[in-house]
Image (tube, rainbow, N blue to C red; front, top):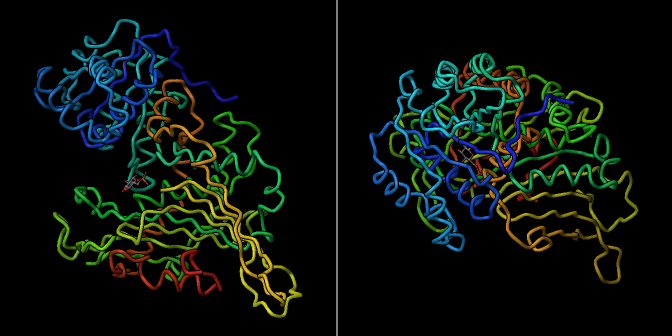
Length: 491
Ligand code: BG6
């Protein structure tokens, strides 16, 4: 058993302290998620939310700010006047310069006596160490305290290790919740159930029964107002190193012995450590970097990346990555795994596609050989699972045609779906670490991803342009075509 994370029982007072409490993430995701948990009676009654910021606001200014910003990120049907008013009653604003020790004494005074403490660090990662040290200095870290670390968790392996080491000086590993919000998505959690709650897939879930795997996380949005962050980050760091690799881990891991956090995380770690390191030659051949240019999405013209506000002229940051990876173990030997993500693509869509092997021999001379069985798991925007089978086309001959069995999870399970952040925040409160990354997982993901960044630099690889509203550069299709495969929308 892993050391158990502290859990807050419903009758315990809880202070949830958000550093960066009036920042973008807090306004768009954290406060709306906490409101929903509050609305549904899931927060312990004596929970207070301390939003920390640098502004010298009084209660009225803070309340006006929250009123003007947060409701826009909550569905209109969920905004209930009484619940909203009581939620506001839980919110406390405190001004702090997180880099200065003085503010932490005031923070200590603002907290409830004997409360459980959860510190959510929704700040730039270069503040993490100082915040932990100052919390410690003010006596605010006890064995029940938890810290939540928001991405980006480093920009390379060395910086990720440094964050881990610094945080570990003040918090034990079972007090640290490293968020990857993809692990909080209902459909991503459902992947575990699909694989390990059913018996029919597992015997086939391996080479040579699986021919290839593709994972796509396509976004239709552009860089938006995050130019400063994004331009120094790029798609590989922003999406592949974390979200896509986490999805890959769930697709590829061995069955864990239980849902105990370390049982799951040990298996994910093995996948990350089995990823075949890419040489510079592999990187040149098996990766595609792209950057969106002017185009149209949903009939509306959109700017190219270089025309977006605050993007430096001539920026070579990638907004698209496609690559072919391999996992060096018995289960996945010689199964190509394609990962793809990009901004300003044709639509917002995340899919995992498992292509099963061709039939060994065809007795149907009228039908060309094609992919026969394919499992498509759509993570967003809809939630469904499709199993492509071959069926006989009605008529006199014996012609085969693909047909699909479709499980629409949205209609199979009516009712409310909590957003990823709500589910993960509830996990933090309840001390459930299974859907959070452990320090060694984070480092293993960087150890595989960083050489790709270095390889691009060594190769002087410039991003290939692609038109906004498409599926990325043509080289991405060519990457698949070399193996006789294609992305799912091209079949
Ligand atoms: C974030 C990235 O982690 O995930 C963003 O920083 C990206 O660039 C977002 O847009 C995508 O999340 P979702 O839940 O909208 O798929």
